[in-house]
Image (cartoon, rainbow, N blue to C red; front, side, top):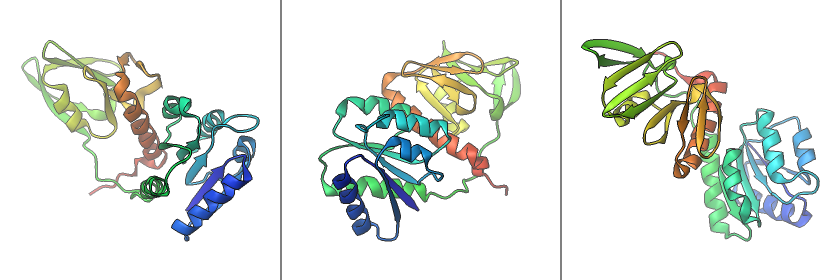
Length: 241
């Protein structure tokens, strides 16, 4: 496992490397003095400790460029600039450490980041479909075809590309059955990560339709979407019986 450090101050790079070698002696470390050098690197580190105040392109711009390259690195911002904390969610940051920080906090964050990197690639078999009762008939709905669902007047409306299915039920129960490929950005909506086209802190746009985003759910949405993207890149990681 490789941990990269990107900070323009040599003493900070040295300090972080010493901390990492002391706490996690078995891990490989590499350091960069600018975002440009990091972007030019041929290998994506498993974990990245990234400063925001950098010469040339700043850390936030660097993070966006890395995500555009497809890097699913566990990203931890280490900075004295508190004002970028909400933008960090837009690039799927794992954590945002404000300088100066205690060694105990640094250790705890890194331990969680390492545990996330080492999570098993093979996940339990997911549910492929569910059975609902609509207009007096039982209908089997393929979860893969569900773009999103919304609720109103005690009814759930499921949207697929070519049709809509309405039934009496609770969105919370549908969310439990649908599993981790789905997310509730708002109490009235359940979206399928697979069909997300773009998003911001107020709206999720899908291949068909859009859903509201509750501000307090935005950080969890971004983290969930990043985890989904990792699973998708691994071929979903599901195994048969």
